[in-house]
Amino acid sequence: MAKIVGRYGGKPTPPEIAYIDEKAIATYEPYVVPVIWAPEAPTPEAAVVTIDGTRGLFAFNNSGCPRNPAVVQHLKKKIERVRRLGYSLAVLDELNYPTPHDGELFYSCFCQYCLTHSPRLKMLKKGDLQGLAEVRKDLVRSVLREVAQYAEGLGLRLEAAVHAPTIAHLAGQDYHTFLRHVDRLQVMLYRKCPGPACLNRELAMLARFGYNPYGIDPDAVEKAGVPIRVLKQEAQKARELAGERAIPILWADEKLPEAIRAVEEVGFEEVIIFTP
Figure 1 (cartoon, rainbow, N blue to C red):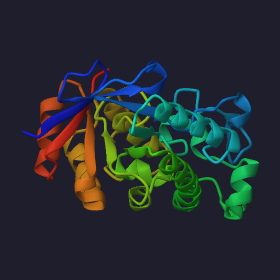
Figure 2: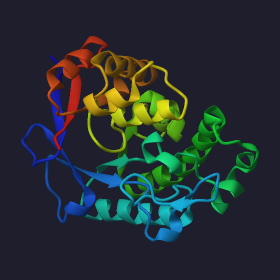
Figure 3: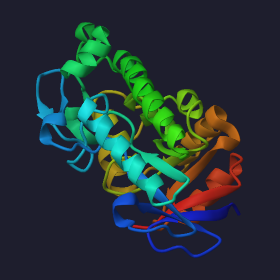
Figure 4: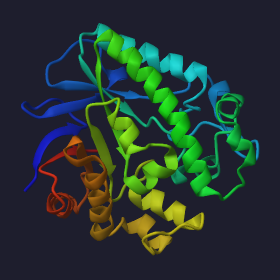
């Protein structure tokens, strides 16, 4: 069975790596890798703006527009702090725009900074998922390049926690673009959980928006979790896109052993576990 090489949640148990929110880290610790929440908004004014003009913070009600200069500067400060503590590697988490999980905020961002960078946004219509995805990819690319160059200048290597391929595409995360700037992609293949990146929640909401690539019953899947076959298909896509530079993060639910076997069957030899 695929080897567990790291965990989100808990303390380090060498040789496994503990991935820990950088806010909870005050000193350097071996076998710890800081995780930086990339779109954290320093003020409510850095919120995303929907196509209808609604403003709001997404994900855990703390995330703003990744193209907003205040968000970018806030992210750079966190990168600088992690490096100052002595870490040479960190994980960028959620460098993307809102996902289907975020409901109304999914159709964003149409703030002044995004509109200035990508005037094509003015021509988009609500429901044009492909058009939105393409613009977002360009916006995220520009932010990723800027912060990765900043981290490199400080001597900090980066990995990135990214969404499963179907959701990543819509959120602006292009795997090939990310791999130009980070060492590895940690692919969030969460079968059943309550928040952003959880496939049961993301795919159910996406189906309600009118796009249902797996033909799921959104109410049933949101409650019970995605079938292992869906998780396996997303893992296969991730493997095809990123090869050995991807590693799955699996949620520690009641079907974790099945999930580990599924990703192993598509070629992954190592996994990271998220323990809530």
